[in-house]
Image 1 (cartoon, rainbow, N blue to C red):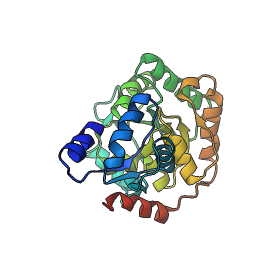
Image 2 (image 1 turned 135 degrees about the horizontal axis):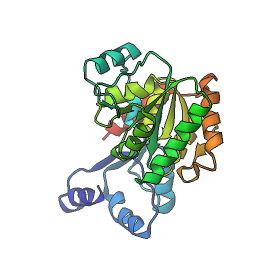
Image 3 (image 1 turned 90 degrees about the horizontal axis):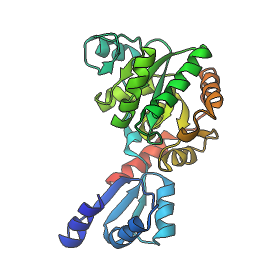
Image 4 (image 1 turned 30 degrees about the vertical axis):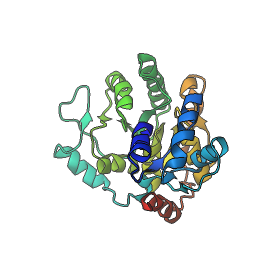
Length: 275
């Protein structure tokens, strides 16, 4: 991204904008590149306040920054539970099951969506962390079916082992964005560490239990929406296992308390196009 921005703006003198941007300056090398490139861009639209603050505190004040919000907040269309059942039955949804050639799942039943997140690695031990969560939920007789969802290829890799261990369906990363967003949005709760997965849940009134990401994005979402609940570390799943699964069970039986000002967020998201 930075290389193309540099070539386009500095070498070719073409209008250059970065939109829907998250920025975490965590190495001296990255800071040096940003100091050279970003002040020369026409505009930079940050999708959450922490990135904008990070830029101005570490790079300095420039007049080309915009406080925006993620363009995912602009999604207004959502498929119904019945729509999802029809799409799955007609073969229009990518769902994998370890024993069923044509997987079945009833989206009109209560269900939770479980994914990984960028805070997890790619190894067998990461699959085992998710498996511990699934087993704990089953031991607590969770009042909802469990659907594994892979918003990213990284998640699909570690969730395949979990699906095999528990004979659970896995909604794959190859689903189109509307289907993927609707799967999460129609769930009772999204348990995972994905930024967009969390937004899709919030757009439709689903509950959230989040894992930390490998950047500050999940904390930025919490800050932007001013909700007070823990974000669990992917590095401490075993230590926080009971807290995580108790949180899920409790939220399944609690009213949604998120104060999501969609009009404000959508107005901010549209600022990505003000270039």
